[in-house]
Structure formats: C-alpha cells, structure tokens
Image 1 (cartoon, each protein chain N blue to C red):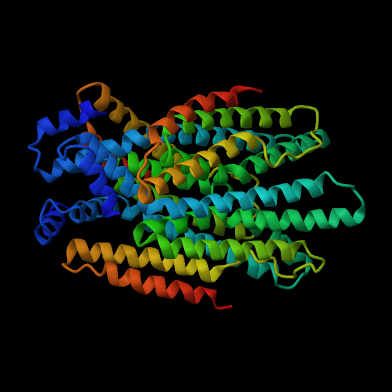
Image 2 (image 1 turned 180 degrees about the vertical axis):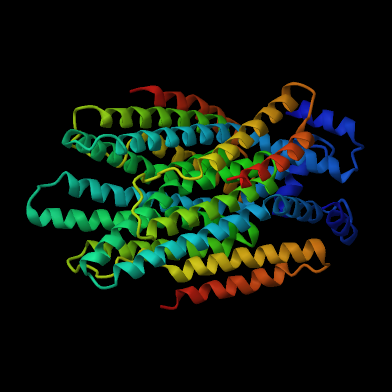
Length: 180
Length: 180
Length: 180
C-alpha cells in the first residue's frame, strides 16, 4: 500500500492536486476490492439460481415438474429475500472494521447458500422453509459493525484506538465460522 | 472531528503517508457511522420479521393458523420488497447531503414499518395491501439527494456553496416528519 | 474538478484541515453523482410500478381484473427480485472503473425494465417469465468491475496503470449496448 503511494508521489510533484486524487482513489480501492469480488461472486450465483428456475419453468408441464418448479421457485425466493440484508451487513462490516474477515465470511455465506439451494432442489422437501440460513454469519458480520462503531466513538470521544488489536482478533475469529 | 485530526497529526509527523490514511479513514467513518447504525437496526428488524414468519410456519397447521401465516407472509413480503429501495435512498441522501437528518428519517421509517407489520399481524385484515408505506419519508430522502446533487453542480459550475445553510434547513425539516 | 479544488484552496490556507475535508468531499461527490442520479431514477420507477400494482389491486374484483392483477404482480416481483443485484453491480462498476459508462448502462437497464413491465401488462401473456431481462447489461457491468479490479492489482503489484486507456475503451464500448 505505502509503496504504491510512494510510486505515485514520485511520478508527480507532491503539491500537485492530481497526486492527492490518485492517492485517494488507490486507498479507497485498496479497502474495498475484496468486497467487490465477493459481491460479484454473489451476483454470479444469483444469475445461476435465476437460470435454474427459468429452465425448470419452461420445461414440460407434467405434475411432477410442477412440484419441482414450486420448490425451486420457493428456494430462490428465500435466497432473494435475504440478499439485500446480506449485502448491507457485508459492506458495513467491511468498511467499519476490516475487509478481509468480512469478505471471508461472505464467501462462507455463499457456500452455505449454494448448499441450501441444492438441498432444496433435491427430492426431499424440507419441512422448515428456513428463511434464515447462515444466521451465524449474519450475526458475526453485525458484531463486526458494532465493534467498528464503538471503536470509532472511543477514538473520537476518548483517546484510545484499539483498531489494530481488534482487526487481528477478528481475523482469527472469522476462521471459527468454518466449524460446522 | 478536527480535534481527532489534530490528535492523529500530533502522533505522526505530518508528511507521513500513514497519517493521511488515518485521517481519511476517520473522516469517512465520521460521515457514515449513523447510517451504519440505522442499517444495523433495520437488519435486526428484518431478522425479527423472518423469525416471526418462520415460527408461525412451523406451528400447527389448522385452518385458522394457515390464514394467519398467509397474512404474516404477505406483510413480510411487502416489507422486503421495499427494503432495497429504502436502503439505496437512505445512503444516497446521507452521503450527498448530511447524515443526521437521513438517519433520523431512517429511524422513523423503521418505526412505521414495525407498526405496519404488527397491524397486519392483528385480527383485522387490511383491505389495502399497502406496498408503499412511509411514502412521505421516502419522498423526503429523495428530495435530500436531489438537493445535494444540485448543490454539488452549483459548486462545480458556479461559485456558490450553500451546503451549510441547506444542512441546517434539512435538520429542521426532518422533525416535521414526526407529524402524523 | 481541479478548478474547484483550486477555488477551495484559495479560500482556506492550505494547511487548514478543514480544507482537506472539503476537497475530499468534493472529490467523492464528483465520482458518484451520476450513480446517485441513476439510483434516484430507479427508485422513482419502483414507486411507479408499486402504484400500478396497488391501483389494480384496489380496483373491481371481476374475473378479468384478477388475471390482470396476477400478471402485474408477477412482473413487479420479477423486477424487484433483480433490483438489489442491479444496484450492487451498478455501484461496484461505477466505483471500480468509471462512473459515466456505468450510469449510461444503468439508464439503458431502466428503459429495458420499463419496456418489460409494460409488455407484461399488455394483453399477451408472455410464456417466458424472464427472471433475467437485461442480461447483457448486467454482464457488461460485471465485466467493468472485473477489469477495474485487475487494473488495481496490476497497479499494486506491477508497475503499470492502464486506467485511462481502459476508461476510454469502456466509454466507447458502452454505446454498443444501444444495439438491439
């Protein structure tokens, strides 16, 4: 990160406003590019789900197919209903605290969602609709937001800045999500 | 805000790039932390709604329960359909103009939504589905975005910067939303 | 852009932290105001769709009307299901690469959505539900994100910065979306 800034400063003279702009841009990108990647992955997954539903819908209209379509469409709806919530929490956690653990949790969430969708597609009709899968991950991301805000308030009104300690702890804690 | 910046500058030497990064981070957090709080509250409310629906769904399947579930599920769907719109307008208004009135309107919106959901759950089936509750709040937030953009264009192509006057007026106007 | 910064610098002394804050704010606004405009337009369109559905719903409950309501409600649902995906891709593309082509694609997407909704409202019931309209636009926006991230990684780990060339190419390519 710092090496890029030095590279940019070397290219321009330091008092040049264009230089300030470039440094700002690089800094912003550096803090969000993992989040953008996870968002892109989730978009690809959404498109995959939608194509599955569309394919089933235009298939033969036998009685069996209709039941499968019903199930698929329901699974898709449940996924779509929690999607804005997931995106909001992911980006807030990534910006408030640190992006690496947030992006890692995001990827785990996508894996859980894939499993949920494929399970729903299978022959066994799940009795619980499961509006909320991945509750643990959403909770972890929310916790990250809260910790980030508390840290910011401590920095503004108090004197202490625990950000680096918290980031280290969060990175370690995010691996705990891998436990089944 | 400025006191924090001076604190940071005192800790580093001013020419240190790390110092610039820290100041940027604090500034960004200072301009969004209320929005993050409102977003978190709305996520908690979403989870509350989803749990209500899930609980009703796994309950006994008598005829009465089925009607209640239908109503609950419909209320939840209406809330979820407007959720991305709400989030988009909230963040745009908060970033373009000023975060305090935007966050305040957001909290009022959440209260209205809670009332709507609980009313829907009650015994009286509402005749109007009400896809759009809180129209006034969404309109106010959109207006804030438009004013913010016009102010930015005036600053870029003209010479004048009315931002501080507008922010004061907006703060006063946002309390008008409390009128029933 | 640079002229605004010079104006601000002239007003304050350059070492004043308030000056840095104002420059940061103007820079951020300059990079997102087109995206905010497109978001606002999409919100207005959402409200238009919702009002259409609500109006039809509270109308007479003849058999013909019920079929129209069913179709309208379905079209609205399909639009709402892809809305968060669209917003996420639009903003990521706008921030990662450049806002003008992203906003332009966004407006084309809104036109396509309007056509889709009006077509659905008409007498002919479409056989394909079309969960995914505007696939080409979503693909183009995703591509912009990926190119932006690759460029950032090249800048960080390599030495080259192709951003300006890519932005020119993207602007030219975005007009290709106008082809039917």
